[in-house]
Each structure stands twice: as C-alpha cells, then as structure tokens.
Length: 457
Image (cartoon, rainbow, N blue to C red; front, side, top):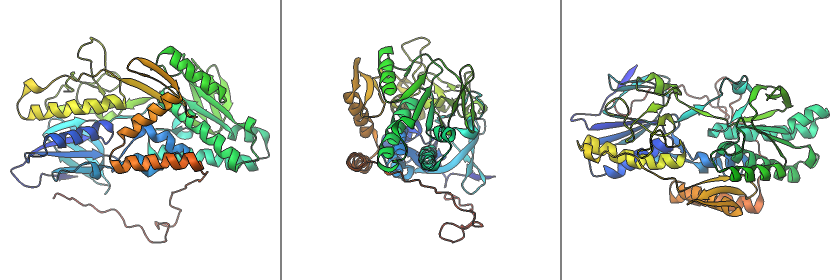
C-alpha cells in the first residue's frame, strides 16, 4: 500500500472530497470559487469514474434521445485551480483517527490519501431490499453502464422477437417490467415505452402493436408518492392509456431469468426487468466510524458537520435535518444536493479560517418538483402551482438543460434533442465488450498491463 503525500512543505490545508456526483462536484466547484486567490488550501476530489454523470437525463440515453457522452462531463474539466486534483479511484475505507482514506486506484494498488478536512459525498448504491434475483437478472438505472445495458437488452428483445416462432417466448421477449414508480421509475418507464413504440413502427414491421406489454410494480399505493395525490393519479392515467399495467401496493418478490414474481405469487413472463426501486448509502459511510442512522446514512448537524471534527457529509449518504423543523430532513434529491454544496463550501472555508460564527445551517425551500412521463408529457409543482401535460414536460427539460455544465454541454444536449425530434432514434445495439482475444483489444493490439503512477510523488 502506498501513501500519496503532499508535494512539499509548507503543506496547504487539504480538503479531500469523496464522491463525484452532484454533491461532491458542486462542493469542489464552490470551494474553488471561494479559494481561487489562496494558495493555503488545496482540493482533492476522489471519484470512481473520471466524469460526473448528469443522472436526470440518464433515461434519455437509454431511449436514444441523448448521446451518452453528452450527459457526462470530465471531472478535470470542472476543476480549474492548479492546486485542485481529480483522482479516479474506489474508496475502500476511511481512517478518521489517522486522517487518511484508503483508495483502490486504476493500477490495482491501494493508496493512502492524507487529509485535513474531509467531505463524504459518496452518494448511494442500488438497494435490492433482499429481493432474490435482482443482481442476477434485472437491469438497473443508476449508471451509464446501466443505460447502455438496458438499451441493448431492449433492442436484443426486439431483434429476437422478429425471429421467434414460439408464441409464449415471443410474448415474454416483448414484455417490459419496471420495478418502482418513483421519479426514476416513472421517467424510465415513459422513455422506454416511447422508444419501443417508435422503433417498432419504423424498423420492426413483423411486431404488431398489440404484442407489446408494459408493467410497473410499486410497493406503495400510488404513483409518484413524492408528489401530491392528483399529480400521481394523472401520471398513472397517462401511463395506462399508453399501455402500462400498473400494480400498486404490490411487492416484487423474485426476479428470475424468465420473468418476475410479484404480489401474492403472480408470475409475469419477461426477459426485461428494470429495477429503479431504491437507493442505500455506501457501506463505507457506516464503516468509517462516524454516527449513522439505521440505514447507514451519516447523521449530521444542519451545518452538515458530522460527529467528528473536520469531517462533513452531504448528499444521498447524509441525513441533513431542517434547521427550522424538528424531526424533518432534507430530501436526498439532486436539487437539494446542489444547494447543500454551496452552503457546505462556505461553512468549510469559515471553519478553516477559524470563524465558527460564519458556519451556518443549510436552509432551502424547494421551489418545485417536476417529472417527465414520456410522450412530451410531464407533471409537477412549481411555486405551489400544479402543472401537467406538455407545459410540465417543457419545464422539466428546460430546468435540467439549464443545469448541464458548460456552454458546450448545453449546446450538445440541445442539438441532440433537436436532431432526434427531426429524425428519431435508430435501434443501434452497441456491444463494447472486448472479445476473448487473449488480452488483445479490438484492433488486435495487446492491451498494456496497468502500472502504478503517482503524479505527486
């Protein structure tokens, strides 16, 4: 195991941020703004990937409305200060007493990173709630790899169905089941239905419209439980009109290779099960030694300080109480994470400078919530006003487009949407796995083994 030390004394105060999601990246960016003229603070950002993923647009990658590269932004392009560093590695453990974090780098070796202040923004991992077979047979919708896998699975099923002679097998191939009716589930359901209907008409003439079958399985008693009842009912009505059978108050019992068992034992034959049902904090948070709740989320003050000095937590992996409401907590949403990051950056700089009077609680009242349900339709509440239909969908796209990092990123996303509206999506199945060529890449050149590189040794 190698230790990556600071470059040379006198050592600046190192802020180590764990996690490359909305919370971690926005914290790093705001810290850069606050310390751009200072050389006594350096910022390190550790992320599993070398890019940040704009997760609200992930379902559109699956449907082909958006190119995959256009919903990601390189971390190194977002950190501009010479004293900032984006490190691609997996976080393995946190040593609070030694003020070190152990990470696994791309070289296959473990490294120790020293820190003076630590931000835990590790986000969440897919929660399966003990449902058998999800890891083996279901497709998630949390990462870019998930979106690629789901798109490939859908296209594969359409390709197979055109050649399948057995009626039962063909029906299973054309049945799509979404687990979860929250924001992610509804938006994914809307996009895949749109995509399947569009490509069927243009490219798969042997598949009849009535052969397609869509299901949503939700444990709670309504769709979009985060929204008012009538908004969820509206979304459910629209989805049913487009062919979805919605099973409310129904648990998903087991996912099998040939289908899914729901409720009291009802079996739905399907070759495509999408799981969007839940998120759990990274186990590294619980194992770090800071105080956590029963779910493993860091217990923090309204200022986002944890039970240990110099250690802060933010985003999905933290339970952040509302300063003005006893027993209430801020929801783990991207909208909140972005705002939390602004306050956290200010609090950290104030704490480093010895100004505890400037370390303030996070306060934010949600302006609105919006969800897309496909077919240019959405639902939402903005400033307390309920919106639905095309207007809500337009507002949803407009808001998230405005949050895409950089002018170039916004231009690419807008161009993708424009071209897709004119020409539609093609059913291109991208299989990017290396073939079994004895360690050779696609071009026949041997892939070099990983080597250890310490850029600051």
